[in-house]
Amino acid sequence: MTFGASPSPDSKDVEFDSNSSLWQLCIQQLANELPEQQFNTWIKPLKADVALNGSKIIIWVANRFKLDWIRAQYFQKLSTMLEQLNGQPIKLELSLSVKEIQHHHFTAPAKTEFEIPLESRGIPDDTPVNGHKSRLNTALTFENLVEGTANRMARAAAMHVATIPGQLYNPLFIYGGVGLGKTHLIHAVGNKLLADQPDAKVLYIHAEQFVSDVVKAYQRKTFAEFKHHYHSLDLLLIDDVQFFANKDRTQEEFFNAFEALLAKKSHIVMTSDTYPKGLNDIHERLVSRFDSGLTVAIEPPELEMRVAILISKARNEGTEMPEEVAFFVAKNVRSNVRELEGALRKILAYSRFNQKEINIQLARDALRDLLSIQNRQISVENIQKTVADYYKIKVADMYSKKRPASIAKPRQIAMYLAKELTQKSLPEIGELFGGRDHTTVLHAVRKIGSERQQLNDLNQQLHVLEQTLKG
Ligand code: ADP
Ligand code: MG
Image (cartoon, rainbow, N blue to C red):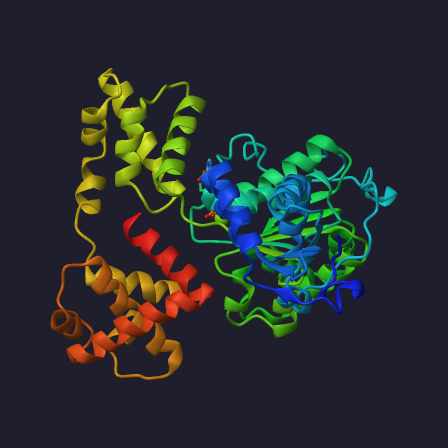
């Protein structure tokens, strides 16, 4: 197995087929054998080149993290299956896609153990768990973070970092919309590391707090201490880095801390509401650092996951929520986990207060206000607002005549979604987008529809928008 970008030297004179029936067969068989989510997450995205003489197959994997995972979980299975299908021995190589290699720096061969620098021990502080204040919320752990398709990758990567920090996926950059569990996950990393290694120097900090720490250090001329504090950490968890926008001094200090920490193989985990290149007003050199480890998304939870979360949270409160009630709530509360928790709290309170059992009728009563809002159909207005928020443009630009691509594209996406998700006709939609002609709408619908077939990024964005709008 190689980690190289190109097939190993011995394969130079062999010709490869990227559309091989051997690989198609293997994929089909795995699709039948593996649980659907597993298949979709790990196997489906793989591409393979098969030597025409059947001696070798190179499977291309999108990133280092997936590569490790596939090697650990599926290598044996793939190997055996391919050999059987091939009818003769075949050499299996896992390799990173070329694109990934160009964009990501790899850390040097890893240390076998996570070493905690001596100077991190026994530094006096106000709540010395291990002589150091971590600012972790101990209630946010992996154990109570429900896993589902929407967070599987992010959770697995975070778990890996918590288990063997300082090695792979550094920095780990986790992004996603509000209330999807980013803060929970980043605390879970810290809590797990501290549980395993009580001496580790861990710090959780919200980006806004970091900004104010920088300002304080600046005013009090205490940069030396500030630096010492940050640069001595083993694990820095920094939440909502989009708040660094336009804070030049902070970005500079963070850049310094970042470099110092990576140099001594301390781990950095960040969260943000968008992927690194989508961040506004953050210096290019910082953005490229953010993207230099592993970047993973958390998506809005799908129905099954919302059900699982409700049942699990109710259980944590000592209440069994019947599955049908969980389904009812999950179908109606779709945007994010924070809102699910809000709905659950209302139901529990209502049930206790009225001393009634939890059933669908009770849930309906408890959530009356919320449901009347949710039950309104998806409106074009709502689509415009959601899309504008997502792409960080003004809602007014949905009706404006402006044409720069940064505005025109989201506008076309909103038109596409309006056609897809509402009953409105093309002329009606045109009217709602600042009195545009129906042919303009038709053009947008066709264009986005065909582009999403070809562009993974766009398809992913549309998927998130659709989930957000309809759940
Ligand atoms: P974000 O930081 O992405 O805005 P949070 O981490 O604050 O979101 O999550 C919002 C709430 O939802 C928190 O109370 C968190 O514990 C809970 N939550 C989010 N995702 C999950 C999950 N998968 N399982 C259990 N609870 C979750
Ligand atoms: Mg958060």
